[in-house]
Length: 410
Ligand SMILES: Cc1cc2nc3c(=O)[nH]c(=O)nc-3n(C[C@H](O)[C@H](O)[C@H](O)COP(=O)(O)OP(=O)(O)OC[C@H]3O[C@@H](n4cnc5c(N)ncnc54)[C@H](O)[C@@H]3O)c2cc1C
Image 1 (cartoon, rainbow, N blue to C red):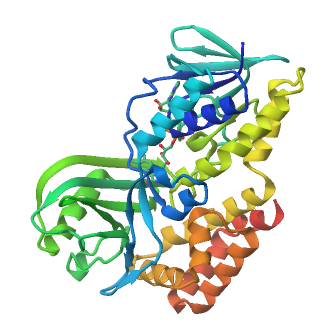
Image 2 (cartoon, rainbow, N blue to C red):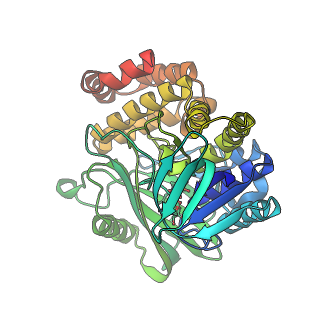
């Protein structure tokens, strides 16, 4: 029997397994795929998030010329953005795991049961694995984590992207475009709803990544719609695709209900609803929150008679303390606002947002600000933004007041 059994070997699984191994725990994993199989997603992150963790070496690309575009004028963000070197990060965590004796078994976890001293997971072939604690990192639709039913349709971030060469640079060379919300690529009557934006970067050597992105919508915006809009947008700029190296279809939930914190299995990553509900980012959060979770689990397991339920309880508290829960409800309120805005309101909202001081907007996006700091930033934005946006925010207080109440009373 191992101390911890990790389900899944995506970024959440490999990172928490390595962190637990570093704490001297015996760790095994069950993974549906070879843990060394390259991850399919392109992971973007703010460069300072990695620098603050001493992990700058894990950037594959870094852009200083980072902008948002809400109207004709580009708004420089003066904050470096990067792409994670996912192969290097994956190899790093695998090597750490190997060093600490972590064993990965290929299989698909199917069920879990618990007794006073251990948890047992059965995979789809009927093989049983036991451990003092099970951590489910099997992604946004986890296999073992229980959640209360969603009270409203779940909103999805969806994106369709192309990495390739183009007849002309689709964005300024050397640039990274976090959001281009211009919708002038269609005549006014055909301007698209719900709004989507361009996320794009120069990868060097005349190769660019351009991605039409729906921040969040329920139901998810179809890939065909995003692909069509991307080509319409490029056509408007007089650009055609010359070579396609890779296409990315991105789809994941933004506002899944939080897990049931009384269960005896712990989640991490998408399985634990760790995606920032207002932005869709999660990698920085994984890197910041993993070590504290591993420490809490190691401490709980020091008591030789601790039950899975007791260890899991402590782990959930570490992952989701009250302040973080409150922020989560506030971000989810923010998401509801964003989904209600039309393109014009979104342009005005984001203009006001990026006119906040950089620590204010950066702390919101990376989820590193405290709750009072976020509230302060939102009040400043409310005071400075346009009347239609203000009105939208006030209407949201009525329609989604439950989220604000939970921010205050949780
Ligand atoms: C296309 C895309 C782009 C994204 N871009 C970014 C970004 O730029 N920045 C950012 O911060 N976030 C981004 N995200 C959001 C988030 O960071 C990713 O979804 C991330 O991959 C989630 O990591 P995870 O380890 O929780 O889950 P996953 O990466 O989904 O990994 C889950 C693992 O569990 C395995 N598994 C599933 N079921 C079982 C089972 N029954 N038994 C055993 N193993 C199982 C799977 O095979 C997989 O290996 C993106 C998401 C997508 C989909």
